[in-house]
Image (cartoon, rainbow over all chains, first blue to last red; front, side):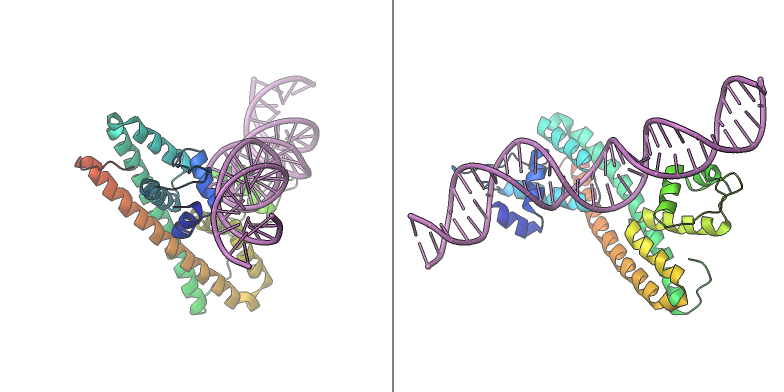
Length: 121
Length: 121
DNA sequence: TATTGACTTAGACTAGACTCTAAATGCTAT
DNA sequence: ATAGCATTTAGAGTCTAGTCTAAGTCAATA
């Protein structure tokens, strides 16, 4: 699959794809005889995972660490699990923070709708 | 209230407080005869709101827009309401995105725990 | 009175994650 | 075979949201 097709499939730019490859999140992607990338199913699987985790705000640094552990083989399984568990906790906290903010936002909007706004921001 | 007390109350740095003031999110904060900031209750209320919205990822640009509308007076009420409603939608989407990612993360962790991990990242 | 520590400013710097540029090469359609 | 679009690289530039630095002022204390 060409880079163009990948960008369309996952709705991301080719710059981002090459950037992820450069920092080692994916690939190195196989290239054909004239040097053009040909993404494998495995590459696509990774990109999907990475994209999903990035959209949740997990940093490239953490993802890189996970990928590196994966590359080291089975002996890193437990460490990988712990890394994911830590990220799970962080993510749960973030969702909670955002849900709290959402509630406040909704409350404020309700004040606007019912014209019960006080004098404060 | 001094800047120090505010940083402690809201657990943020004085740099951030002065930065928010510089870009017009709060204040200008009243200063005493020797030029030192004395935050009012109103300032504190704003800081709390701003901090909460920032923690949910709402950009400084958007918050600045909201503050500017507020400063313009009652005639901007409807516009402010719409702005908040837009942010509410964005926030709900973000929370959904993150919840989806969290589910995938949990599933993956479950694979680790039950040793049912496949050969992929 | 001298020092210490909090506060002030303007402005430079940083981190993270892209995003863009330039220059070269490749592919495809006319 | 040539126009025109896609792809490649290395490396520079951008954006957001702070964070840090330097140089200075001020109040309280030893």
